[in-house]
Amino acid sequence: MKLPCAVIRDLLPLHAEGLTEPETDALIKEHLESCTPCTEKLAALREEASKPVETAQPLKRLKKQIGLRRWY
Image 1 (cartoon, rainbow, N blue to C red):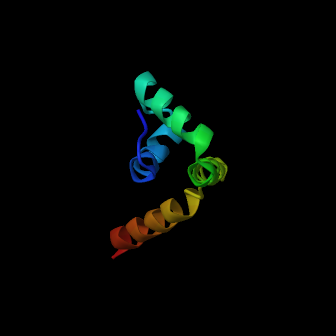
Image 2 (cartoon, rainbow, N blue to C red):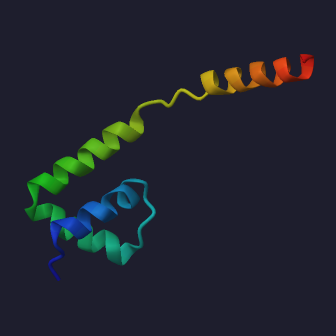
């Protein structure tokens, strides 16, 4: 079964995180074998996911705000 690129692009974020069912994985892999743009999109998603996310800075600001509210 050939799925359109629009459907595959909607599923790629879930596939990149390993959240799709085996049947869906098989359909996505089948599509990726013949579609270069979707393969590139998946590579970009995986590269983006491998970048570290800065979480400490927002938490530090929140802690400071809470401290200031307690002080007032």
